[in-house]
Image (cartoon, rainbow, N blue to C red; front, side, top):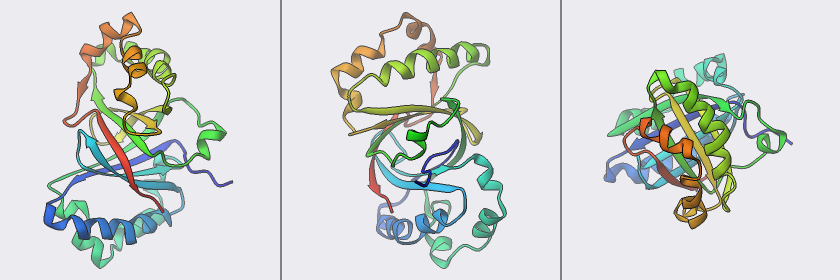
Length: 221
């Protein structure tokens, strides 16, 4: 079976004017996702819309590794945009456009069952920085306490953490959900403050605007 997840992630968030959304969505769904997935190393992709937080539109691309975006094949695709790309891409019409590239930091390897898994129906995404002096404690807490505790909650498929290779803020947490209401449940709330370490670390987290956001899948090839 072909792998659908690797160690890299390309995330493109956008807000676009209401009068362009129809053509923007048609361009993404009819043309752009397939075009990007034709590049070797692009493993899978889906589009999502925010039901909490933002920006509204998200294209999530699972990559074999961040190095895919330095490949000759990707450079050729970027260098020859289609007419619709020149007209409707988020870089052109977006009132907000965030394009970040990430490398996996937790877990450290991609298990076979994860590598072959599909794009989740819903995502919760946190984008954050912390002061440098607590980064080691922050990462140890997140990897060994916070994510594992939330992975016990019904409806959580898995949690992954990434460090930005391109873009800010530095850290991204990606929870895959079976449905967008998972983090409104009592079991999720019970895990939120389950560890005393959380009360020491969480106040230092500096979230980006719109984070954490909850997104539902709107399109997948």
